[in-house]
Length: 315
Length: 322
View 1: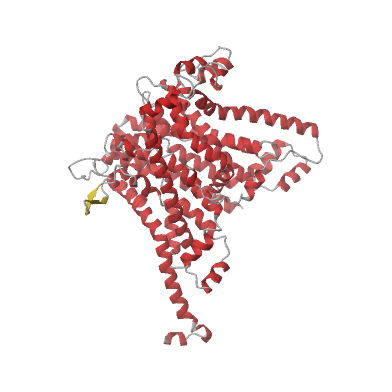
View 2: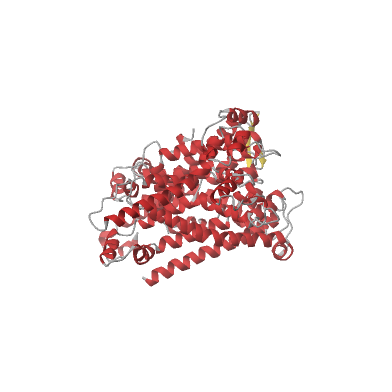
C-alpha cells in the first residue's frame, strides 16, 4: 500500500487497488468468455495447420502401422520435378483464376449497377441473381453437368441461337473445353454474392456527387469513371481478393463434374491435394501440396494488405 | 425443416435493406425521353440476365417432375422449362427407395442446427469479451482471431483428417467409462470443428462495440454480472448480427461436402450433399437426380425467400471489412 502514498494525486489512492481488483476479475471473466472459441480455434485450425506444416516434411500415410518418417524436402521436390499432374494443377488453377477474377468481378459490378437504380422490381432481380449463391455448389455442379451433355440443354440453346450453324461440343469430355465450362458455371453460381458486395459499396457513394457531375454535364460513362469507379476503390480490392482466393480454392465443381479429367485438363491444386492426401492416403505429400496452396493464398492476402495501405497513403 | 436455425426474433431491417424497397423512378426534370429509353434498356438487360440466372433452377424443378424419356424429348424446346407432358411425382417416390432420404435430411438438420446454435453462443460470447470488457491480453487474442481468418479450410483439410483420426473419444459401455481414439464417423466430427469461427467472432466484436458502454456501467452498478449483461442486454440488442452469423453459418453447414465426404463413411451418419453420390451410376437416372437435388434445395430456397432481406444484409455485412 505504501507505494500509493508516493503518488502525487492522493485522491486516486483508494480507488487504485479497487480498480485493479476489478480489472483482475474482468480479466478472469474475459478469458473464460473467449476460452471456448479460442480453444476450438486452436484445436481445429492452428493445430491442423501446424501439423500440416510438420507432416509435409514426412512420408506420413493416413492409415499406416509405421510412424511417419522425416524426409526433408522430398515432397516438394517430387511436386515440382516428377509430378506432371501437379504442374497441370497449378496451370489450371492459374488459368481458372485469370478468367474468373475479371469476368466475375466485372459481371458482378454490371449487375450491381443495374439493380442499384431506382426502378420497380430492382429487389426482385437482386433475389434472382442471388438465388444460385444459396444453392449448394454440389447441386449446381450436378445440374450443370446435365446441362453440358452432348445432347444437353446448353447445346440445344446454342443450336437455337445460331440457327443450327454451330452445334456446340461435348463440353466436359473435351480437354479443350472442360475448364471453360467449369469457369462459366462458377461465375453463374457466385456472381450474385459479389454483386451484393459491389452494391453495398455503391450505396456508400453520395448521391450529391452524381448530381454535381450531372450539373457539370457529365454523361453516364463520365459519371461512372469520375464518381463510381474512384468511389469503389476499397470495395474493389476486397472483391478482387475474395474472388482470387475463392478461385484458388476450386474443388467441388471439379470433384463432381470431371474428377480432374479429361487428361488432367481440369485438375486443380486443392483437388490434387485432396486426391493425394486423402484418397491415395498420402498424408505427407497431400500436406505439402496444401502448404503450396496456402503459400499462394498468403501471397494474395499480402497483396491485399499492400494495395489497401497504398490507398490510405494516397489519400 | 431448417427454419429453426434462424433467429426467432425478426431482426429489424438494416437501413441499407430498407433502402432496397424499390421505388418507381420519379425524377424531377431533365431529358425524360432519354431517361425512359434508358429504363427500357435496363429492363431488357435485366430480363435477359434474369433468365440466364433462373433457367438452370427452373429446369431442375421442372425436370424433377418428368420421367427420363420426357426430359430428353423436351430438351431442345421451350417445353424443357414447362411442367407439361408426362408429369408426376414418380421420381420423388423412387428416390426414397434408392437412398435413406429421411436419414440424410435428419443428419443434415442435426448437424446444421447444432453448429449454428453452438456457434452463435460461442462466437458471440467471445465477441462480447473482446469488445466490452477491458483486460490485459485482449489485443493479443483479437489479433490471434483475426490472423486465423487467412487460413482457408481447404489448406488444412488433409492434415485435419489425420488429426481427427487421432483424437481421443470418450464413451459409456455398460455403465463403464471407456475411451478410444478417432473421431471419424460421428456427428461430432461434423460439428465441433466448425463451431468457432473467426469471422463470426469478428462480426460480433464489431457489432457489440456499437452498443453504448454506459448501459454496461449502469447494469454493473445495479449488480449485474458480465454474463447477465451479455444475456439480458447485449444479445437482445444484436438481432442483425445474430441473423448475419446464423445465415452465413447455416449456408456453410447445410452445404458441407468435402469434409463429410472424407470423415463419414457410415451411410447412417451422412448428410444430404454426400447422399448425392448414390445417384451416379453407369446409366444415371437424371429424373431422380433432379428430384433429389430439388428436394435438398427447396428448404434452402424457401428460407432464403422468406428471409431474403436478412440474407442480403448478411452478405453486405460480410463485405464491410474491406
